[in-house]
Length: 113
Image (tube, rainbow, N blue to C red):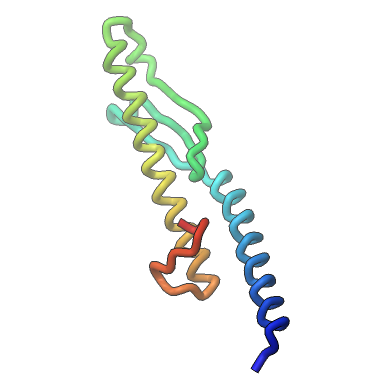
């Protein structure tokens, strides 16, 4: 049986490994891009899987003062679509990381989702 000091050292090492992997995952998530769309592609929002908005593209056909409310609604819808996609990618990446660490499915380790 391991001594208490050996067990504490092993636990500390495991915590450091998890922290390092979490930091690497955050960097990775910020480099993965997703695109949300609305209005059949007339409005597009690019975001990182971490949820940072990278850009917005609006089709010229929507640049009409009379359609201002429609444009605003489409931009909001595209942002929400991008956020949903970012959440799905982030969750998939976190599950993959948990699996690679040998954690059982559904195991809720603080900071891992």
